[in-house]
Length: 191
Length: 191
Image 1 (cartoon, each protein chain N blue to C red):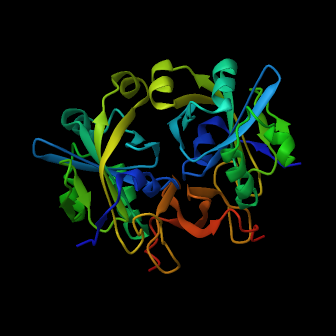
Image 2 (image 1 turned 90 degrees about the vertical axis):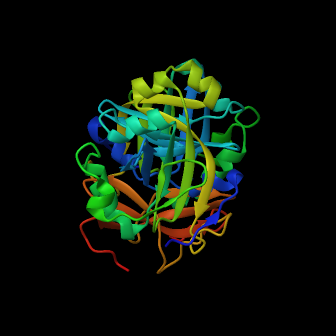
């Protein structure tokens, strides 16, 4: 089971601020789904809001629209293959949780399952904006609960260090970057 | 002067897909401005679109609304201090280009200046959506030209390697991550 601690809502944006690829989970009327999303970002600090692009042809989209909720899970490299796999399959045809043996746990504020082994989790209530959902596949949410693995996030700051788990940042075609060295902008450039 | 090559529009999303912090530039009626933005993402592939959060109190916002255009510049670690500085100052009170000796060059499709020394550049035309601009500070743009430094992006793929320039990913309080190791999701986890 993933260890996790609550993250103060006003600091929840820090889980996503550096641009990690996320896994989107959703649930409605006994059906759940999981997909990956490279296109997400924070939208506000407090109350925290997020934006995420959810394509029209996804099964996830119907679950989000019906339930009014979703969760964003922040995977590490250990979950990179899973992140690609759940982005290439559709929940209409396969129960991806069963197919991949994905373990989940239950959040506190929304029904969407949270994926074990992630670095952080944001439980979100959909902010309905039908025009931009329909026109741009753009979905907005208010973060109503947030969690992190205390091994990598101390409640205020990331502590992803050499040898530990790190967030992953998708490019295209199965290629990712891992996040790299932390630095302070007051420090002189290394090179 | 930065070396740069054009990036095919259908591949322009790859410059932003991994979640780098960007610098937003804008220009209208002889006034230009520059600010940083941690909150941006791709929104579509082809034609490529982007989304970026531009706060109400920024000078940039008026320039974008008046000109109907902006540019996203992708800085490397060498520009991290500048990225923080232009995020903390307002163009209403200071000409940030003069104050920091920022060198720029001219794009082909929009008036916004492009910042020398960046890894990539996206010239964008505003897609006017007044409701989400007013309610969420959320601005959408169509990418109408894109450029990259051929030392780091070969037109289709990033080649940010050890010792070379890398994109930067802001967290909070002057703290960044540099992007790290590239990997393929088919490869087994390193740890």
